[in-house]
Amino acid sequence: MSSTTLVEITHISIDEIWLLAHQEELFMSYEDFPWFKNQPVNTIIAVEEVSQGHFYWPKIDVDLTLEMIKHPERFPLLAT
Image (tube, rainbow, N blue to C red; front, top):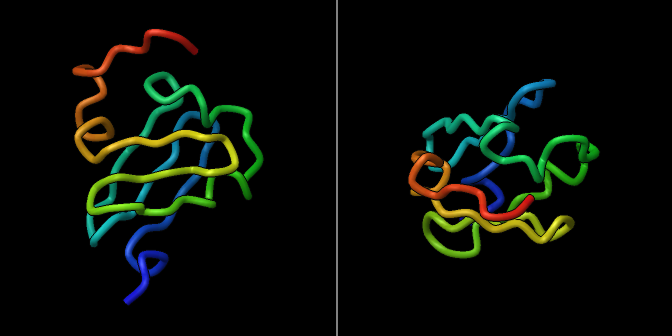
């Protein structure tokens, strides 16, 4: 089974996006993940799982781990 069937963006709003990965839906606010704010939809939905629990958005060169998404408070932004 390819990774494209295991990971996808299920919702995009003005405040957040939702990532579905391995039957788990993950909330990502723009406050915690500012790289996605003001991006076109086709950029946000172009997500790949490069390894188990490691997600990459090639059009904006953002990569995040499952741990970062679930616990953004543990990974404070150093630059935006």
